[in-house]
Length: 253
Image 1 (cartoon, rainbow, N blue to C red):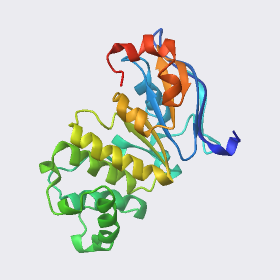
Image 2: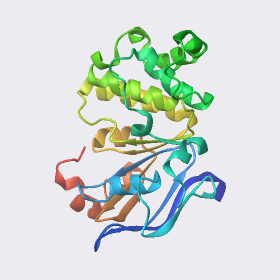
Image 3: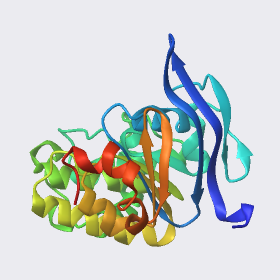
Image 4: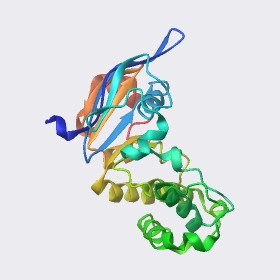
């Protein structure tokens, strides 16, 4: 695999908390334009690894490269400009704004007027067309005028994804996108992730093994802060170490 095919790479990435090693020498290589899942039992280090990659934590050792650039000591606020967005970074829904207004707020950031809430609403009308396109992409065209706080949970998660897409990321990190969803919502959001992954890289933490099997090109299995196995679902699901450490805990498909 050529280096240009790798959009995100960690080299010996390590995070220690007062003697406890949460992430232990992880070497991760995410191929551009793929869906890459991180799985593992509770306490495996998945969220800590996400926090390191998205700069909410500083590593104890090791380095991180994104698009060939060292981002080990970059600030979290810089990453959206570089093309990396984590779902919760922009996904806070404003419950008393409409669905359309929520997406317009996210669209303001690239224009440099992110916090100009005191401007008249008419000054934002030029953003409506793009906002409506994003809402159509996530299946929310029928909810444009609804208050965000009134949306069912699954639809609210779709709105959160729309707000992240407003920043036009080429790499999107999703932390348990199916958490708390009904089977109907899971099917809807799975279809959404499949569609938005066609022209961007998706990295996700997910416990729903059917979702992982259906969506992922590559799966990295973490256990006790280390990579236990990596590859397509067909390979890792048959790995005896994975079966013992993760699949046997009740999460098997």
